[in-house]
Image 1: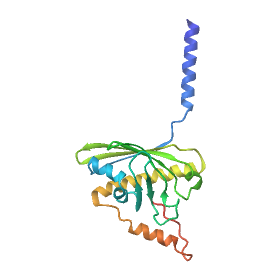
Image 2: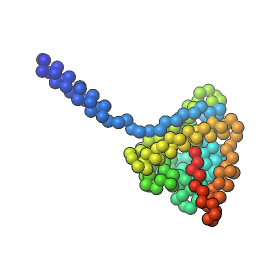
Image 3: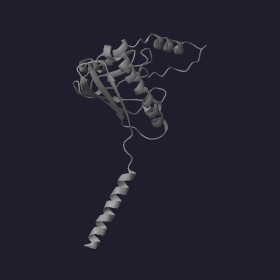
Image 4: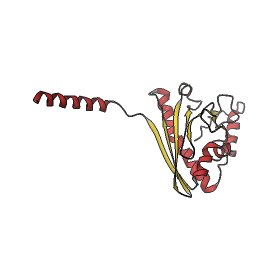
Length: 198
């Protein structure tokens, strides 16, 4: 009996120590409460007009499994360099949840060649207010993975902040952003760093 108890105790201690060595999946979690109905919040993430009102200057979206979720931070950029080119919706539960695959920005080409996953959830707080939560996971470790994680940890806060502002003061005005992009693409004479958005 004593040996059984000792063996059980050792087994529990070993399991606890092994469990402690496994790191939790690295993820970015953000949340915002917006002055919008559930329908309005959902439309902001599932229509071109909605995306343009807070997320990016242009988009191509088809809200169905496998449908386009192309977010163009730089609509005038070369194919594959517009932003989140060739992304797609992975799953949708109308007015509850949507998910999409995602890539790193063009200035991080190694990480950009990979994909991560984002889940956005919607919950009515009342009939005029909606909680939107975002969970971004699927990260590798080291190098450009760490840089991409740091980038999006900041950028998603900006995106959700823009979503909140969109329902408080109207759609985001992309005029200055697009002017900055045009200036950056202009011939030599002004080698400015590309704007990175967020």
